[in-house]
Length: 115
Image (cartoon, rainbow, N blue to C red; front, side, top):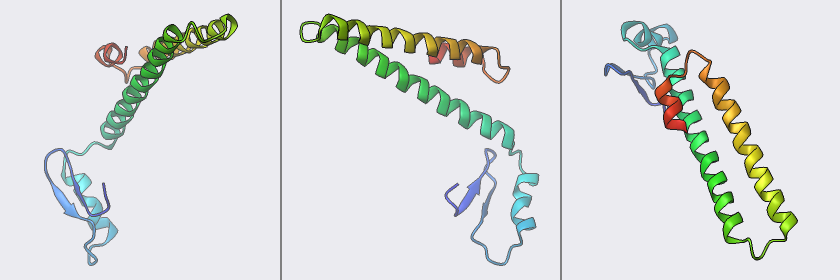
């Protein structure tokens, strides 16, 4: 919501800038429509989580690519250190995804799309 108006999934809308409406009247849109705040928040959280997982995977892939392309310029210890960090972060992400899979709010389709 940008502060001006609200539209639910059904298409009901209300202008929140109406000065003569009481708060009670402004909130009636939530009772009159099929707006489900729990579903809305869950959906937004899932979307943000999926986006975050994609970002992390992109960074890890970039790190792996860099470690392969910079093998000749990195010292062996720096290369091993970089590869170790990438592996540890992938394991950490895998553990977090495994933990999330046990939560009822995460579907198998979402997990598959995240990996």
